[in-house]
Length: 487
Image 1 (cartoon, rainbow, N blue to C red):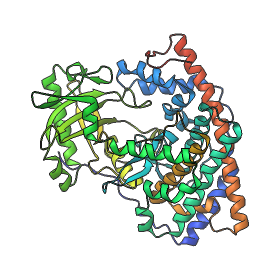
Image 2 (image 1 turned 30 degrees about the vertical axis):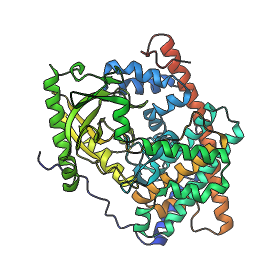
Image 3 (image 1 turned 60 degrees about the vertical axis):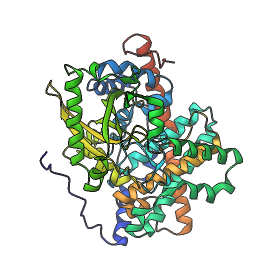
Image 4 (image 1 turned 180 degrees about the vertical axis):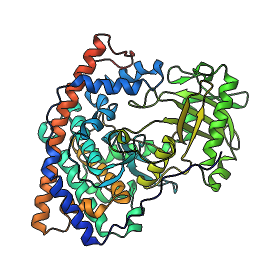
């Protein structure tokens, strides 16, 4: 495949530290911190649901009932699947004008743990489908709202939810101020090593909180390709084969747009060869040690359901040396739709290069690809390891203390992503960096209060949209699979 044009790196001269601080102060005058708090309940819920239906029209029709079923499970599940609605809403508000490589879907469930290339367990952002250049505050507002909505789902008091959101806001501001003091290489290489974090803060955690986190870490360490094969595949005639479990794992022959399994297998091989082109030589050298075994269409996530996703099974030395890869469709980011185009040659490249920019230690096998099926439909994909020590905090069973500590970890990771890719000094100045100690405390409190107020108001909006969504399912106007039930 020939070379494709790529977006140029940001080479703007950011100016001196003083000029960057002044830029942050100017942003604060243009879009005051108090403006971040404002949200009036949008009355037109139908337009929000229409955005979901428009998005679903580009996905696999048979999977849309599963998507809506999963989203109907709770107001928090609905929020997770409706990034497009919130992006549309945030686009109606004033912006600071300071751009970063935005996550685009920075809710609390999209942060977690995974193994770095050096096999250390780190905590960071772990979902990048929507990443694109965008306003830094869009990410912060989505994270804050998700903490409030998660707290409501757990039945926490309004006071406890507000404390958690404020803790998130202050952690973000303080982390950004720390990054503003660091050299660029130090910012780039900073990361949250979970063993170090737990050891450092264990005295501040309750015994239950510490044990819960350590159990989650051990579970994450065990999630690798061998474990994925144990759960999803079998050995048949000396060859690894997926256990087919529709709709979770669907046989290749049932994929629409291809006449038979042979044709589809060929298309997957073309797709994987193009993926190789996106990798550095050493990564290609490593993958050439593996042999193709099998593939299956796989249903993933909540908001991602309906996008085309494949699990590809490879073997190294033998069947006891597996590698399971995920090939997932990439579409236009919701940030691109409501801010500006990302500037990459394909959506898959956008996701991969965006992830490499904002994640401290990206998967070494991360790459992108594309394919055109016999119907003439062009699809972009990105490729990564299916399980690479990936783990998450149990948000369904999380306690008040756990929500507070998780909110702070997420805030640090988000600030790190923004400091790597945007003007971290200007963002820090917006939240008070460079002021006297007294003024700084006041600015941090104002920032925390603004985000807590917004999170509460937007959680009300999310609940109103969720009720309408469920009403439409009950009325039969939206399809819903039985695995999720409207409440």
